[in-house]
Amino acid sequence: MPWELIVFLAAGIAVALGCLLPAGWIPPLPHDKLLHFLAFAGLSALALRIEAHWAARTLWLLGLLLAGLAIELLQKLVPGRSFCWRDMGANTAGIAATTLVFGLLQAL
Image (cartoon, rainbow, N blue to C red; front, side, top):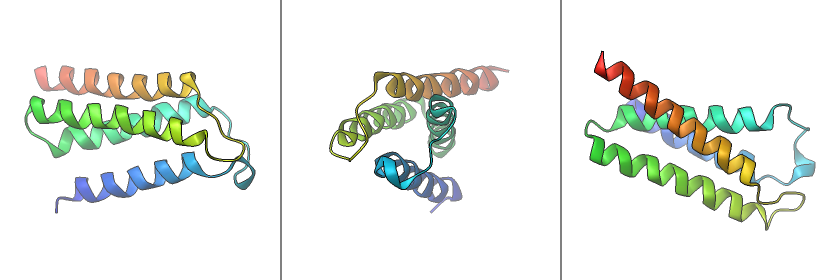
């Protein structure tokens, strides 16, 4: 198993767990949207390294987008948490920014 996949799985689990902990279990986090952006940007970078072909990469990135949506929907079931469109926007922006930079770097 490539190291990128191992790191992707570990990071994905960490992001999901962090997002699904009850609000009282973690201290207030500054720059919450920046954390969402960075988490999904990092996962996207790993996904783009795992796959060589853009068709497969697109599926990985869509999967990340759907995972972000699933996390937000599941937060409705967690005490002190709720669905937030701004979190989804930050997740999407992280995926899009990483994909754009990755594509530009490949074109060089």
